[in-house]
Length: 232
Length: 232
Image (cartoon, rainbow over all chains, first blue to last red):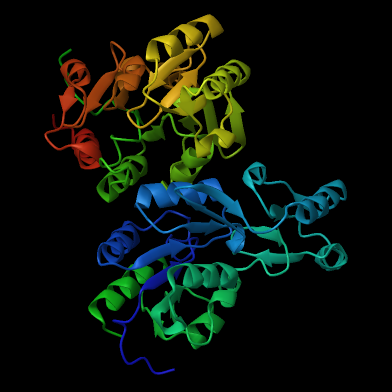
């Protein structure tokens, strides 16, 4: 895709860990400033992450975002009116219980705040067996780069992007996504403008329209500022 | 109290809303940078707030703090090992249910994430009656400046400060607190070094050892940098 202009962009949807943060998960203050500037210039700015919804709630409040934001890989949303979960929690919870019983996973502090998925720490034991159990349970396993997640089919970041595009009546070429990891691929859709910081996985950089030379949150800040100044 | 030197300070405990944020609750990136600098210089940096623990968890992760942080006005703590609640939730929950039944309060999204208190939105109706009901229920009512809280007796920010001082074996003159609102008063203890940004309530500014001329999060950043450079 050859980008003629970035001035048409009306929505920026971003991943959090690795995209707004550095390798230690600390958030980039330059990324915060860039997001605020984008919003002040009339763009819708939203986040989608494997994180739990109260974490997304905090980011939304403390960054000062107006659009809804999504947790649990896109399966649950929060805005000023409350929390809305688009998927069930029963299947992920059942699988996690079995993994814990068999010593194949460790529990996470954040699981008590989940609405439609479960997270776990890997033990390194028998990943093939975990995949098989997930398949039999009708759930999917993904890795956010920071932890592992048990999700419902269709519960991915593309779901969140489509919801936002519907909600704001935004066309594909008016939407931009920024991400760094494989779980961002479902929102890296064909006609959508795709950006990646320098630390992004090669597969994401290769299909991106804009790649920053700067890694992590500062790279994402660079991408946002380039959208605002319409420079590729 | 006449401060001879700020170089002895080993711990900084801060409020969040109004102290790290601006009037719209957006966090100051200068405050984030200052907290990181203090921690990199060997100080323990912690937060205590009326916010729920997953919000404090997020702030801790994304700011990159190592010390435990406290939510629900000091009644619950989170660190790398998990959540620890120091008070019960039964009494606050019962009172909230009665206030909701009688139409004296509105519910908050964040109540589902509380361990030892309840928050509510005021309706403006019959505050005297609410105070009386709280007294009869053996709980206390406070206002964080952003919302109202139903708390257990002794559940205040001074509790969190004492816990941290015990935990790290830090004496009163080695601890600094920064806050802006009345619910910060319990941690504004006699021999502890007290700081306030310019927006702080008069009562807090009057008993503070250092008051910044700058309001909100940027004022707190100023105070932290003055501690690091030992300038009053």
